[in-house]
Length: 110
Image 1 (cartoon, rainbow, N blue to C red):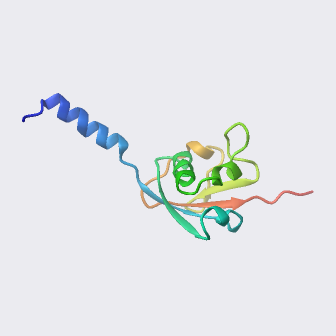
Image 2: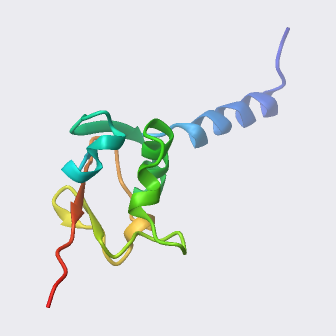
Image 3: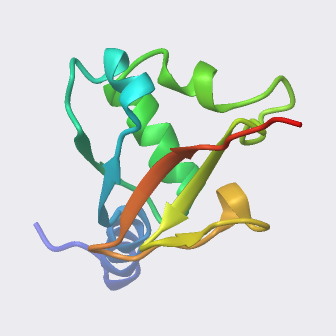
């Protein structure tokens, strides 16, 4: 059975669109109860937000700790991409294959 050329191209584009990269997330000790004690978790995504969504899929409940009611990264947390804060882009910051995300608790006080 021969597949029409445009169908092949559509299939290739579909595969390319759905390919996600591998990124490592270093988990803050407070959040390790959601990772069964694991310090790092491999995730896939093209942005910090997609990586955190994949983290939630693997570690249910962790997202509730990281996000505020508006669905933004809560003020208590920051995410670093290769040792650089993702602020102000936060969840929209692009990531690439091999990047390392670190979830850091911010210290507040006065």
